[in-house]
Length: 115
Image 1: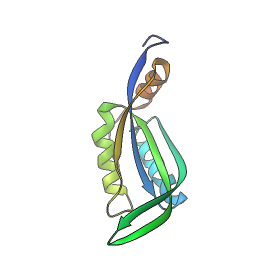
Image 2: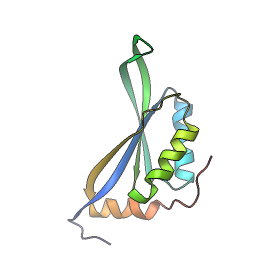
Image 3: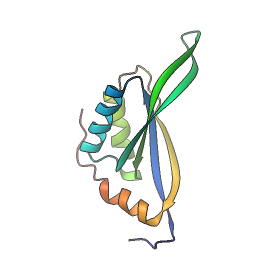
Image 4: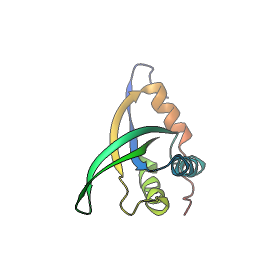
């Protein structure tokens, strides 16, 4: 248990997918495997170069709130289950309130990876 005013480290792993069904499927796999405490999904527009052409796509960004001990199993799950040939897998370290970080830590219990 941390002090209520303390800031504690959590990780956010983000990726993008093309459809709500893909976002829902990945979020459910991640949460069922207890590799994140929360997966937030938000619509975005992505502009990028792909195979020599400028692209513009509507996508959904998944932000997975997790802790260090679950990072590699979470990345492994995303690599094995992701619908994209080259998925965006970005990891950010954030400072969260102690109470929120405690909740994230308590909810993450990587015991298995769904392959």
